[in-house]
Image 1: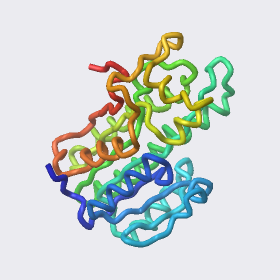
Image 2: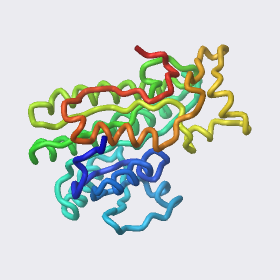
Image 3: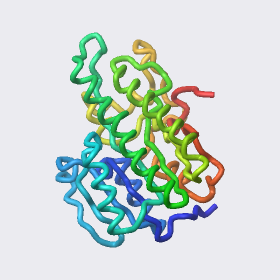
Image 4: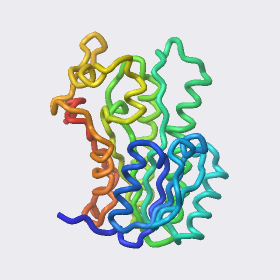
Length: 257
């Protein structure tokens, strides 16, 4: 099946310098979309992105409400109103809840939950006024299963997922679809940064009963492209009757029904 609905449409992507975000940008460009790719200044500095071939890179802090509004307006003036949106920006913290400071808790929610709200609200308004569109939020399977030393991260992603579903409900009558892709362990710097040695992959796939964590039944880690392809389906015309869905792409790790 060939996915359609991308040719010459403006797609706005956050977290575009990260593993999943970069893969989303590449997939959108390959499908013919015009892409505004955004991320923080430090993240952009690591990849030295260049504009061209239908891609424009902009600096964006998703926790800044005015910054989000200004960035989307800037993008709109260049490529026209966004018809597609992917919110891939996110941060991770693996502190136990009993040791976590309120400041660390708030910083996770500022990016993972409030940032998703600010981006979703802004894109949703534009799409509702423009006759429709599709938004995909990149969440986490941790939103649906308790995790040791990931309580704040899991809670922030759970908040994001419910916000996205409620946003989809509010926007349904305006022909705007809003869905979530919930990755499991994916081979990105966010994951490998938690590994102490080169056995990290085997330990993730095998699981850890002492932390009440199942392994991955498919016996492999996800690649960023796996997550991007799931997002592309939910953005496409072929998913035209899909909204408020929460698609887990985790190799079966959560044993979710």
